[in-house]
Image (cartoon, rainbow over all chains, first blue to last red; front, side, top):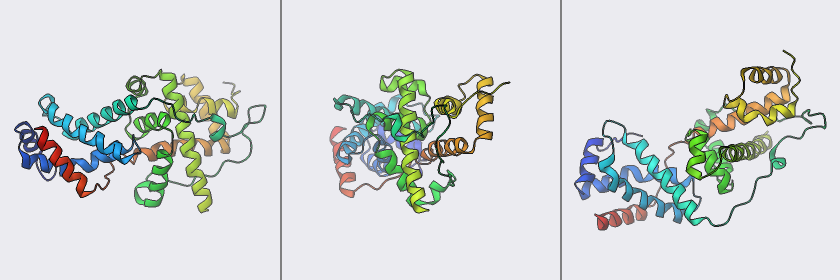
Length: 200
Length: 80
């Protein structure tokens, strides 16, 4: 993500000066990608709108702390992710549905051998860029996960955060974060395998 | 090196295997098991590919309604 329309320095200076034209341009350039990031954490568009508004405000208020030699997009994205997680943790009082391992894991015989056949996977991970339907199936599969599984999975697999950092961000033990990522992956894999198998 | 790992053991270690968290000897045993067990290899590949595919969703752009953009502009102007 690069600041194409207005240069990064112009944006930073404009935000510092509270220049309304620059602020409008800043919203035009960054609200869509930031909204995309936020929607990975909350499925509810009104919630996402509120988080986006708060994120843009935080970016402007913190702009003095930004190290100018680095790219501004990862910095803004981090604010959006932290903001989404903080917001969700505050609002979520009840836990979502637990994913049971048996629902999505293969079955094993008593002596530990895998039971039955496993669907032959024939997808190249790059296909998801070229195939809009596959991308949409993947997105839906991730979005359908309960919050407790979706957020660690997105942080690990989509954003590439280390497990230790995910555990710290979410206030979890590392082992719990790992279990949730693993179960989330199993559920996503099963949904995509069902889709691909059905497609034949 | 005797390999007494069963499919179930490999499944239980799958995440640590992909994260390179295992002792090298255990990692090798899993390599051997996957090389010799097509169902486990299928499962490993599908699990790993889902994880890789999720990475492709990074920084996706979504459409936002013009009214939301306008609301954001008004809101931020008020806050400045």
